[in-house]
Length: 563
Image (cartoon, rainbow, N blue to C red; front, side):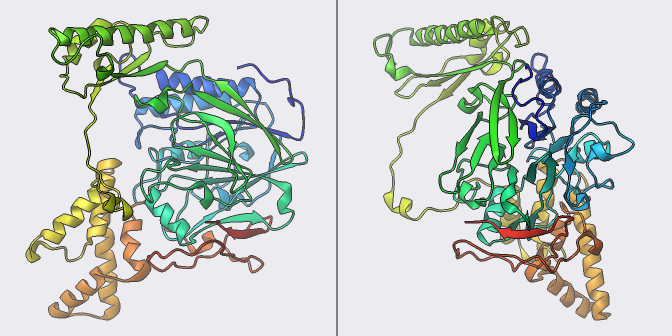
């Protein structure tokens, strides 16, 4: 990366390096690809330093694993210390109440203002779905970096019932920037909260048109089901630019949403974590320049990213070469696939000329459609031909076959829920079908489902124990408050406590992922008001518990999201 001469010395221009989905530690034990994510993070940080950016904005999934390895944490800390600490002055100020912006740490202020640290490039990051907070304390790997003073973790929502997004208000010269962030939340839950108007954004009450509003989000952008994504029209129209994490395809050039009139940039992942077409797009990071309400995004190609090439082959399209009845058809199929792989390798060699930082062995995927009566061949034997030339010799070939499907148009008129069995669904189904003597008495199916999901997906070994302890203490408090003493009354009250109504239903479920908030965490500002705008949706849900609105040094006005 070479520094841009344009606006380099402009005291009113923010220079922000934007990246997302670095997935540090992905395949770190792989002999060939184990160093890829570390090399790319090193390049990103080096690029930020050479371009003398004001700060780095990460859109989630800095880490691939929820509990990164010791090597992964050591490498990330070492690189952040190498590139982000130094004597270069930080030339912008924070105007908002930092105890609200960074309320998940014991050090609720931006790291470069800490008198014990010497930060030259602040890093602001939301969490993604891979490195999201878990456990009773609601901590994640980013919180370790935050406590170390290397990263400013923001956008962490405490409540499972209402989300208030408080911006980090910055000023450089005459340019004022409002940085909003929302860490990853299960898409279906967040979708429902948007529909029920349980998501609000706080805005500066004065001079609202004088701020450039930047929003970082980490959710599904493409539609994976009726509610398993977040439509862009859910986001408020006062935003200027949305940095969309989680989606791995690089679409970094800002695209205008004609309905909401803001721009969306999708940086994509910095490393390929799957052999899918979206990952084959060339990887970039962005250098965003903001002056007043105007912006410019410069695409910066990543040079350390391993090349990835993918092609589709439909065997039925090669009738002039072979058919399923052709003698030695398997060998001819292999010869065709061999030629296609060689073609991709030759293309990789041409692109790699003059790029010494690019890894030598590319990723190659050939998707073979063998519909029409063809048989598969031995992929292991085929892969041996390329073991020294590709980074993924075991999964070069991917066979697929199109099945003829009879469409029932009557079912299309009334779409059903998205398919796919989840852990919590399995737990619920088990207890629904179980005999009465093995039904849960103190615990709930919802709580058990969530605890098992945390145990399986996030490796939270204490999740079930924490749930049991929480529910037991809750039941004991309930019985003591009722003054129950007899065994018969205890059983009746325990069953009543087992099936609470309203918001209390989620007490021990939220205990697994959301830390408790003290009453002093928020202060109410009578000058603030909440507006609700948008279309009404018919959707049943638990009643929302009203929470106190955060108080800023600069007065903020809550604004409901547009639907």
